[in-house]
Length: 472
Image (tube, rainbow, N blue to C red):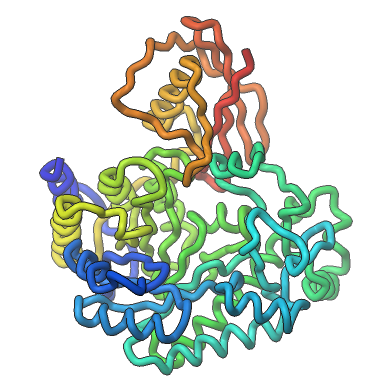
């Protein structure tokens, strides 16, 4: 298996086109780290070096913890980026602001502030991006962190609103059936300051619309408030000679709708969109489609990377298929959530061989990893052969009486690949419902007499998730 992956990587230089990306040298293989642990920290960083990683994004839980990480990272030849959770702060800051600045918190379409209400989980306490004091607070944070020696840059995360729409599998963890429509309780961005600023610019209240999420002016305005926050922080970091990356949702179009985050307009040096395959379609072509769309819609001055899931469901070894798909689509580097998913010496050794191969490809091509010339992502869900294979495997499981959803990290019941099931005899997929976000097909398994609805959500040109509902 290792040889096959390396051959595929090496073939990139011979068979694919050169992507137009910023080709300055920089870290190529990154990871996120939630916190430098109190015990075993040395081993964590040693494993990163063993896997051939170049950089680590360390969550800023405290300056002391960050400084400890910088010291260990230097020892293990890793660049350090301070990982800032921008509009949804860590617990100590969150509690301080709830007590001292309750008017800073975001408000939903129902007029409920996050200082009082819960959205999904108690830790979701997002700030209002239009509030001038919030903006100053965040820029000041960057200025202070720039004083720490060894911080080479920053990673902006949670620079967005509460999720209006969840990945379709995760929605089941909250007893939600996602159909592309937005529940007002989860539709945030209606802080009085936001509404006043919008009314001054456009002359009306967006809540007067039948569906504010389909109002282009309001949707653009909300995204622009987040963009302004991101670019203020980026400008502050650049003034101090620091580079900035971010961890946004998979594509600018998906992010704009799902969380009000049009990151293609951010002035980043790098971007690591979170292409967490096992949260979305469970098919590596999701990473390919996202990278193709990101080449088109991202900031051309920003180096396109990608975030890949290693421990969010499924076999960690599938990381190689996901990376292959992302590089073919145009990614210039990879970040792992997280390197702890490379949990055996054999897997870390295999990853290092892969990483060294890609670095060689980049060096041989003038600092750029070549990519596929595909002009657009495949928008027809039925043409995603591997995704359809996963769907039909799950139809087999449902016919056998197994659950599709479960209380797991990605909302899907764990599949035992060693199990076999009776063959399906599927009829044609018949389209029964369609709008700008959702397509629903019905299909019959003639072998069992069972019928199913198969739902697909699509934002922009990327099929972003599926669900199966039994009808008989």
